[in-house]
Amino acid sequence: MKKYHLFIAAVLLTLSAGLTAADTYAYVERDSTLYLDIYSPATQANGYTILHVFGGGFFEGARTNKWDTAYCHSLTELGYRAVAIDYRLGLRGVSNVGITNLKPLENAFYMAAADCSAAVRYLVSHADELGIAPDKIILEGSSAGAITVLMTDYGRCNALDYTAELPEGWKPAAVVAYSGAIYSTHGALKWSLPPAPTLLFHGMLDKIVTYKKITFGKLGLYGANAIVKRLAKFDYPYSVYRVPGLGHEVSMAGPMTLDELDLFVRQRLINHRTLFKDAILRDTAVHPTKWTTMTVSDLYKKK
Image (cartoon, rainbow, N blue to C red; front, side, top):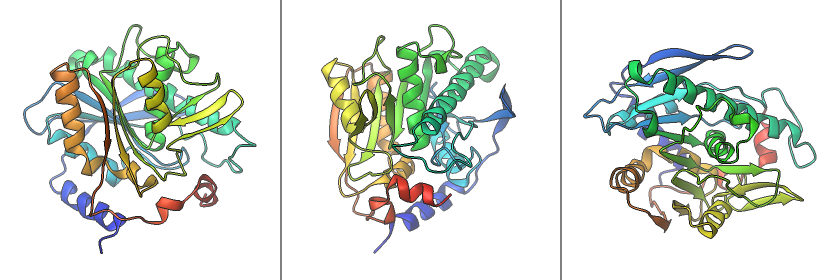
């Protein structure tokens, strides 16, 4: 019976074949220089740029990971321009992350979203030379990257300090999150400005990035299920794919859900349909692995 990690490996081998080189640019100076890679559409361009943020628990990962470069290439095959970015890993070298030591995690969230904001600023500032339409930039990420893109749009909507580098008045065309969440310090999620159309994928058993919510007073981490409830309350458009029987494996589902992503873009962005989609996603080729039951404590024990 095919296991999830073997299935992903097979997908990557397929996507890696004929992978074209990206153009690399330095986009901001922090403690070191942060770079982004731009992959041009391999087929007729649809005008949209997907800014991809890699995962890795905020302590590992890179924009040049084989999985991430192959995924970006797969997006170009659908006509997207793909951009993979560096961001600072705020939990690298940090131990004892948990409910009694939230400050490092909070800092990691804000640092990553600040870097994502700076990457957007660079793309918008150089839009003409890069061939990018500023109003057609989609933020997309996996796991830590999914938290980053959701936090970036949430910060934009609420004028939070960590997104101060976003271009004034800019709004993402959409946000796509694979196993993501939003961290709030002011209680239940609320938006001062309307959020971008949001597409969520989440394993219903996820114990690394919660599918539901974890709250402690006004502090809270809100996963897909909780985000959708709040979006629905305020009548903000969304699409969510809930994956029963799986946990954090869904963070790596990008290569297997290209059809769902492309359908969302065509229906919501190109055809301007206002959608509220709530679907169960099952794939008989995918089976539970250790990632189904793995917890945050398990993840950071590996450091």
